[in-house]
Length: 563
Image (cartoon, rainbow, N blue to C red; front, side):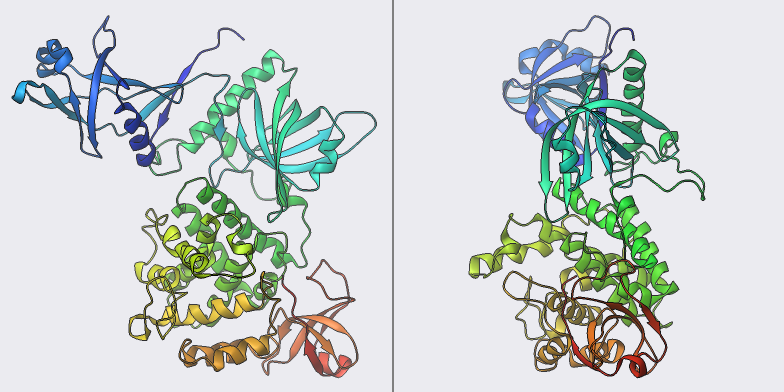
């Protein structure tokens, strides 16, 4: 392979730059290297940073370089942070102050930093919107087992995959596996690996597994480094300081339509309807965005826009099929399921041609992410069976936690964002949160979203209670006009009815069925029959269309199912 070279990797995120420079401000944290031949690093004191305008250095101890700085010679700042060398680009002096016996230099603020990465240790993380599938196969004995997953990061020495929780059985029985990476452009690459650390996520029904590559040839090592660098190159097109002018990596150019289905964790999941499988793509984005938030990133504006468009297109195509599809995503985290259900119901309420498309898109975007801030709360808080004052105060922080991560979403209507993200949990009488706003301060969209959010939440199991029947939820809202706008409660009831799409009901003839469509009178028009109470599954019973009541009898009860 030849000599292994170390490389500098650019850091462009303003928050990361500020955090790294803060380390250089520590005593002994920085050196200065003049931009000229045979220069050697000399100690310097970084006094303060004023992002993004300038930095202040104390060069009293190295005042001999003042003349060169005044003549315009540039310099870099160097330092060690977490064991890695960090350097600035070449900076220029703006002003030198020699008062009070000190010599201080004001210089440019770096718009990026560079970290020295050892080639074999550098780990490239896939950003939101970058998808690489992986197939893990057993290589031992006569076992012919395999499982599909998603690549999360890659280095020359190993990788991290996200696999379905069922992969635990395969990995418990093997020492070595074969991993085949499947890039969007059709490139495939196989390598042997040994599973190392495993972290289970019961809510997402996933397993994060770290692998160490084994018995790599020189050619495999060369290709691995190429893949690592291409992933890093592609990731620079994302994030706070996205390099939009950078050409995309060919590895991430998707194949044309009609090619083989993509490889990935969700590719092997089953769904009750074709629309549910399509909606699962949006759910997959929300799931990944939630993880990005938990890792300190912001809401990605490009991906949010793209998937809001996707959701809006599905709603315009067949809103009833989409309403039922929201009840068919049991493999997804509850925050994802709740957000999608609220978004689709709000689109159903705002389906009038009088509502501009850009407003409906903003509604879809804000509604589907409105609860993701709860993923940033202390672990275990949402699972508590009862809440005291401290727990309530902690819970209410989810609104501000999410709003703080929306700074890059400039395309999103501020009025819609305020109404849905900031005000969905407010109440007309001021008893809501986070601001305790009253009716005078609540816009129409906030009044609508409050009703949709509460009904949808009531129809799901919670740690302190089971799911409510729809009639009980309606009764609660209709008897609480001091909290919920009666006009929007009435509109909600009129739009969805007493037996909404997505209800599991029993007919007088004894049959159980999921209501998938209603006729113009609000009676069931399409019903999927099932044998037992449980979430919708793939083609488990006869599908009836038309005059369902004449065949099955009247509906006698709804059976609440938390899906």
